[in-house]
Image: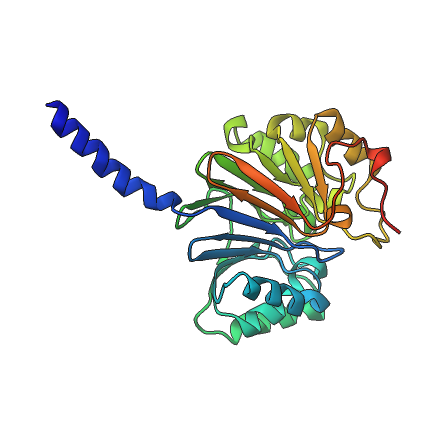
Length: 291
């Protein structure tokens, strides 16, 4: 093969691959108080993971719209607790949604019934029960479901959808409210290569029911983000969880301390911007919960 032909082939390969990372990915960990809501946005693609509580639905919708987004390609409802699916009802009612990934476990609450009714009212939404091994390619985003394999209807937190999301060489692990039993299952089913990521969304608002030392050692994130509220009656995040993260040298960002957290990445490096300033490497005792 001549040098000229090789150069032409390399140029063609570059033209084919470069559109995949045409724009930076922005990941918005939206401050919804006690609850989860995370927006992934790159080019014309958008995915929302959870929507906070029912009262936060209008706020989350306004936030999404302010990013210039008029449609959500994928919505992941990690599990049917109110602080995760409540806000999704307003969003589903008022914004086009392509597909909803749901763990397929039922809850006895009226809110869960309202969530299902909102989906059924939209005939063009694809409803999919997410299972371990499922993959979605959303433009340059690769979304891999790594939990649940067999959801437990008796334990909604441990039935949470856990997804690994890759953009170039930058990776995220979104964990819902998965607790230590689910973490142990993932450690048994998946290799370190699958679980090892750059950025971890800490499960269950930083509760001590999650983020075991064994799990964190394998995931080995550089950055952890905790969705939690300053008025959380459960005391999330737990000091024990913060100690474990600090001992592993992880930079910790919290919505109760930092407000909305936005991570921007070109697929190689990333920048983190927060609504409020606080030291992400400060020891747990130095970043007490706000009153």
